[in-house]
Length: 299
Image 1 (cartoon, rainbow, N blue to C red):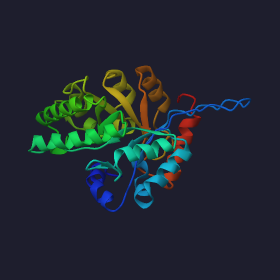
Image 2 (cartoon, one colour):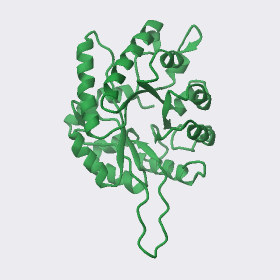
Image 3 (cartoon, rainbow, N blue to C red):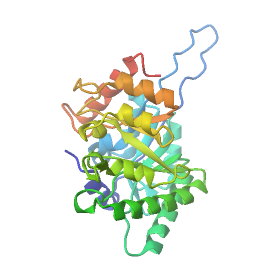
Image 4 (tube, rainbow, N blue to C red):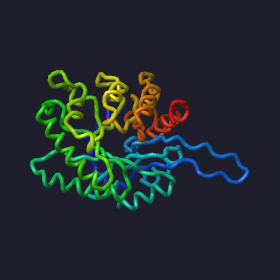
């Protein structure tokens, strides 16, 4: 199974090899010509571009964005930041690439674990915030942390809670929101029988930190994502819609219940992520779109 943290560590190498990339979200609809039947607005279906990570490397980012737009996705999340650039592209240029295809980029996955030098850590985040604000994003999401294995201690949870709050204060200054994305380990690892996920939520400020709940990893971790959306409606503001492979392929995820609760909570943004494949990445990303586009419970 793909390892997100290893991927992020390799981001600078991908940039050095000429990768250019993006995250997109497209507005829907468009006016119909006089006398023609109005077009049915596209559903607000988002995509995490990590789903096409190999294509981003092998093709140009421009080509990948064109493919994604053709599929019908309108809301994208990136996973390729390095040193002030998004997939090796200046933020404003990247935003224009996305906008020109009728999409918008709204979220980004990026991260820096705590080091022994807090000043360097925050300088890194300040530069990242500036870049993503220039790209017009709404969210900056840290996709993982060292809070698994031996790192799953209450002291570490509290340290990261403080760290996340500090980052959230910076993003709030430019009208962006900082958040954290889970894997399964935040649920499997417990401290005094309380999942690390719960402890993270309870040790961060709801005014400055949100949570992007990955519904598949939550279920793999042994919990129902709907229960967590009910438990933390003020903190879980973004979702990763995920399955074992293409969306809907496993038959084990209750996506109707997930979407019903998400809409009840007022969740506005969510992103398909495909990490493993039955076919090619493009085939499974398209299958995922088609499954959600045909679902009457998806708006």
